[in-house]
Every structure is written in C-alpha cells, then in structure tokens.
Figure 1: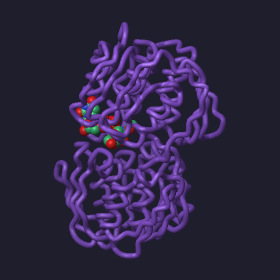
Figure 2: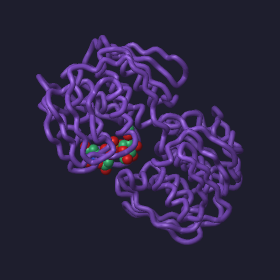
Figure 3: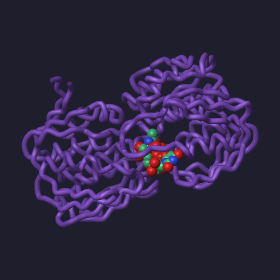
Figure 4: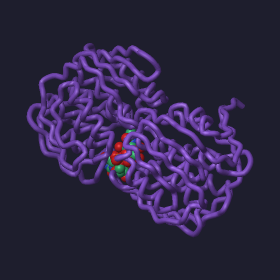
Length: 419
Ligand code: UD1
C-alpha cells in the first residue's frame, strides 16, 4: 500500500505550473465519440481519471495514440459497441458523459451507474430529464443505465438545479440532434465553456456556454481534423493558492486563467493573504496567521465546493472562529475528522462546519476520504509539526498530476513510499 510521508512545517516558496483541467478533460474525452474523424487533444492532465476515460473510449472502438504524456490523438471513426465496460464506468463519476456522447453518436448505450468520490447522494435525474426531452428512453436496472433513441430532436430543457454534469451531458446529446436545443438555468463553470469550445472547434454550433442559457444548433456531423488544448485546472490552481496562504509561503502559480480564480482571490484577501494577478499567472503570499472568515460554496462564479476542504485547512489555522456552509454536497466534511486528528478544532454539523482556529497543526496518520480531501491533507501535512502519513492515495491520483513532485519543488518534504 502506498502512502505519502510529509515532514513539516514548511513555508512553500517558488513556482508551480498548472496542468490541464481534470473536469474538462473527463468530458472532452467522451465528447470525441461524437466525431466521425480524428482529433488531437493537448494539455491533458496525466491522472488516473484520464487514463480510465481513454480505456473506456478504446473499449468502445476508438483508437487512441499517445503523442506524449499530455497529448493524444483519438480516431472515433469506427465505434464498434454500445456496451461500455461496466468495471470501468463504475469507477468514476464522469463516466456519465459516455451516455450523452453515445446517445448522440449511436442512439444507444449501456453504462454502469457512475462511481467516484463519496460526497453524498449523487443523482442523475437532471441528466435523464434532458435526454428524455430530446426523445431518448432511459431506464436504470441493477446498477446499469440503458439509454436509447430512434432519433434525437432539439428541445428546451430547464434545469431544476444548476448541475455541471447535466449541462455538459445535454450539450453532448444535442450536438448532433435535429434542430435547436436550449438549456435554461445551465451551469457556468469554466470547463463547460471548454467542452463547448472543443465541440465547436470540431464543427458543432454551441452558443452561450458560460451563461445560464446555452443554445445548441444541431449539426449533421463533427469532422474533427483539429487540435484542441484543454483549459488550465482552476481547482489545481486554487489548491496551490490556498497552500501558499496556509503555509505562510510565496508561490507563483503559472499557466492558469486568473479570471477563473476570482472567488478564491477574494477570500484569500479577506483572510489576510496577498495576491498579484498577471492574467495567466498569479502570485500568492502570506506572512501572518490567517484571519477568520465565512464561506459558502456555490456554483461558479461562487466559491467552488472542490476547494472547500483546502480552504478548511486555512480556516483551521485562522485567528478566531470561521464558518463554512457547504451548499452543493451533503457529505463533504468527512475530511474534518482527519484534520481533527492533526489538532484542528472543527465541529461539522450537517451542511455547516465551525472552525475554531488553532495556531499549529501536528502531524498524524490520516486517510484521504476523497480527491479534494486528499489535497487538503497534503497542505495540512506541509504546515503541521512533525510527520504526517496520508493513506488512500488512489483518490488523490485521480485528479492531481504529479502532486508530490510539484509540492517538493516548492520546498515541501514529501515522498511517496510503498509499505
Ligand atoms: C461536478 C464536478 C465536481 C464538483 C461538482 C460541483 C466533474 C467531473 N465533477 O460534479 O468535482 O464538485 O461539479 O461543482 O466535473 N444533482 C442532482 N441531480 C442531477 C445532477 C446533480 O440533484 O441530475 C445535484 C447534486 O447532487 C449536487 C448538485 O446537483 O448536489 C451539483 O451537482 P453537479 O453540478 O451535477 O456535480 P457533478 O457534475 O457530479
């Protein structure tokens, strides 16, 4: 079993390069199934969710050629089956994009109910609502989703809740449908814009991505024959920004889009951190103990739930009592039990957690309960006194490329060992 060993405390200093966005990559890869041709994708993060996505595409008949560790070509001209491998699709949440893409391309698909981080109930009713509005029939039996459509026809779909996954999935299923689809109350996250940009580069006609109304004019075919570069990862950039604040460090975060980071920047300034914004890079530094704050997670452009645990580390060290309200996921405070093993004083009650700030954390053995919890525990280990051991690394490897190497370059004493 692998674990991370971190010895702290360290003040992180230096530069870090941000990889391509996980949440964009895991949607763009299924989107290649819509292309009756060959495309090239660059700046893919080298993470296990991307590797599994590629394996699923190959099992469906696509041919993937790795150009280097972050670039591939995908040839989706010959899709050979509509049965996605259940063992792979059950492994992660974003496998639900296979449904939208395969419905669009083949009019039929069978996949496993998606797995992924246990953040609470993860229904897909809004995805199904969208597919049905376009004319598909969807049934869920014994953990398998079966979707089929004789023909997909554009329609208006109002999302009852703002859902990233449902917005992208309806986009995928409507790109090749006949007529126009309008998604109302759409999510606006940067990766939604990125998936729309990818599809448009391949020949789709999608307008309004990044606003709450997206209009998709169906086209007959996506030809591909183009190269696309995945957007930088907003959440990875935010993770390093918050690591700079927690560790009283000074980090220049390169290859990011600072416009995507505004909600994080605002909160960092509120807790006493300093930020210099250069548009495609951002310097974050902090000399003082963080001040307390109140945070509520919200859909973009609000404060992202995927940075809530990392912010939790900052607030567990703050001067005074802070509150986090988690409005997206029911069970996103599991990491607080692990942080409390390191000396933090967090009291999580339902969707709200109270952080009574402590001046110092102490190293301890802890378990990564999900992907972003794992990132938070790494930051906690770096700022804590003594040795921290982090277990369940498979969560972290799903979403962060080379994370220990990136932190090591910033001065962290961190290594991966096999027990
Ligand atoms: C995506 C991200 C995830 C992030 C989340 C919120 C990917 C691969 N994952 O997840 O990292 O934490 O956005 O920013 O991009 N919901 C329903 N019915 C549905 C769909 C969602 O009730 O059909 C609810 C969910 O339970 C949740 C909320 O809507 O409470 C938001 O979920 P959604 O935006 O769909 O998250 P994901 O796409 O799964």
